Length: 209
Image 1 (cartoon, rainbow, N blue to C red):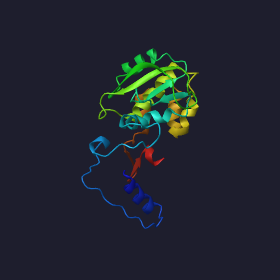
Image 2: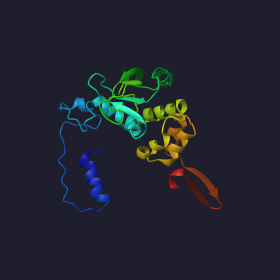
Image 3: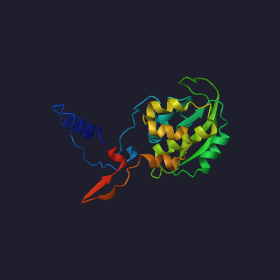
Image 4: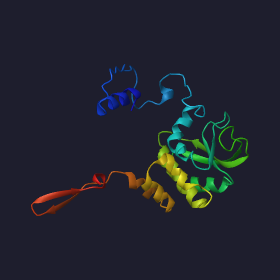
């Protein structure tokens, strides 16, 4: 949703009653990427310096409150996620063999210029976007979280992952070592199942609680 759409929704659903006026844009469609608009990129955050980083952020951002470091330096235009002490090579192989669409992973060594690991020499993976249309950033983040849980069951601070994930059920599945496929399936809407009881039809679904 655009900011204007969000504003209208909040104003209506929460009955705020603000005198809200939204100027509609010409020549824009929802399917457009930012670099297709002809507008100049302005960093929405100091560490989000490109459209590539913004594309990866929905998945990578969920990992930021754990003991990972991320760097968005001018050389590595895509975002890097690093766990202190991991070799990067084994993690790269694990993630690449998962066959996740739209990205590939290469091992790197770098020194973050911010965060709790500032100026420390770290090893990890650089995430290269190869097909932004095929990429599902949130699913990629879950893939990485599942890999971290498998490769570093004691070192990675999995409980802190829940601070931005804000989904106790998904966090529990990650802690149990469930596959990314099963984790993603857990948050998808469940189909309605009809049951005939006497002369009545009852519909049950996980969405109804």
